[in-house]
Amino acid sequence: TESKYHRRAGNLKTRSTELGSAVTGSSLTTVLPASSTVKKSIVLSSESRKELAKQAKVTKEERRAQIDGRHRYMISRLADGIDLSEQQVEETIISDDKFQLIEQFFAPSGLKKLLFFYQDVLQQKSNASWRPDGPTNNLPQKKLFITMGSTEDFTGTCAFFLRTSDEVITASNVSQEVNFGMFDCTNGNILQGLEFFLSQIMIPALKSQENWGAVKEGLKNSQIQEFLYAVDKFVSTLSSSRQNIEDKIQLTKVDIDIYVRNLQNPSDYITAG
Image 1 (cartoon, rainbow, N blue to C red):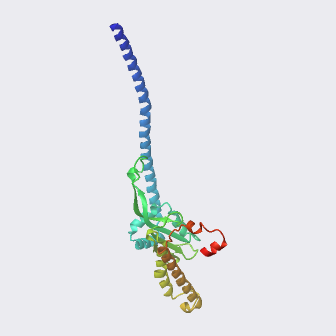
Image 2 (cartoon, rainbow, N blue to C red):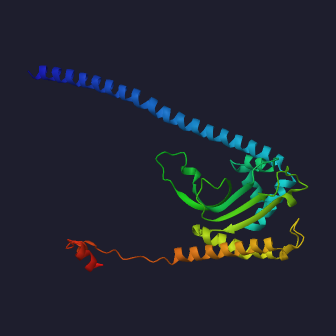
Image 3 (cartoon, rainbow, N blue to C red):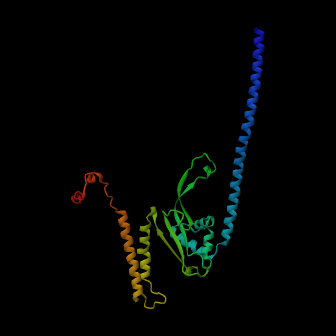
């Protein structure tokens, strides 16, 4: 019996070992390709990132080669207004996805305005950007970027360029054909920023204007006076609207049911009134 037991146990042990090897073998067959795929995926992802970075560098250098006196005029205005170096502004512009808007602005009968926002934007840390299970690590950081003004929330400073005609913008006429301005709307205070821009910059500039083109009388002309009065009135209305919004009155919620619960006929309503 003892010999039979050992033989049976040995057979069980052998079968168990064979079964374990089969399971282990199948597990390895399943796990190894998966691990290999993940590793391959990471390598491909790394190669893709390198290729994208290479393409981005080529694009930047092509755009840098296009920069001429027109771009330099805009870069200098932006650098002065936003307190950045001209090199920083140039790098930002040639790296922007909307760089082509600048060329559309320069073209004959092109865009009437070109906007730049300078404000906090959430930036993702590059070391976690490729990890699907990694932390987001989004941090607010000041960024200058080109915009159409209709897709991003405006929470910082807006720098704008406006065309005065439909002529093609060249290096020789850019200073005459393009106007530059800025207004600060930090924390989303757009009304306050617009009010300050009009009252402290535009209106004083208009009132000191001597050359009004075809209007020879200048500020003595009745139409010019009416125009300036209308602008003053608009700024005054803007200021009142802003103050009303900031100093709004919060009405207390009242349970009206206790007042109307016992109203049964017209005389009750008259008495309540």
